Image 1 (tube, each protein chain N blue to C red):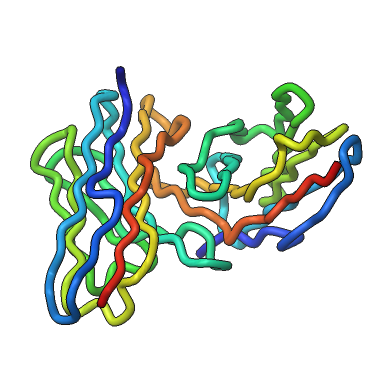
Image 2 (image 1 turned 60 degrees about the vertical axis):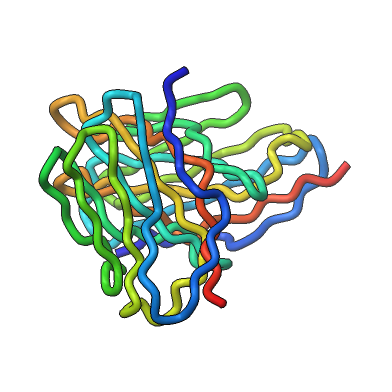
Length: 115
Length: 109
């Protein structure tokens, strides 16, 4: 079955540690996105990538890093520089048919808690 | 750069109608609408492209006024299953997809 998979579902991190969230898709989509979801603030864009080996900062990129070495994979690293990392993280992918973005497919999310 | 959604929350009785609005200060290429149930991933409802088109999906439809940079989602004869948080996503130049803060919709029997 085609889809987008995030792992792990729950993640606990000690303050000062880096942690990497996995996102894999087998939909052959070019574009991939990372969003952070906090209560009352909706989905805020962290990073996005339109093509392999290229990515752009979103609105809240500070304290995060990404890589896009393969079309299927777009891992997100939450670094110790991120002041308030406890949140629900959603990864999405979409097809980009020449112009514009088609519907985005979301993973089931990773809930990160700093302890 | 997040689009602004209104209202923040709405409570309906089954069978009532609702409108959710989405506006942006930036020029838009397209507008997406998604619904998220508690604890689940957002699910795509529809996408509207430049040209002021209107689309429908069962009893849910939407319009996009490109000139005003606004979109509205119309839910008619609401059902319990319509409950959830609705997000509009706005696409700007370069395939950047940005979402609003969401509108919580609760349908009561």
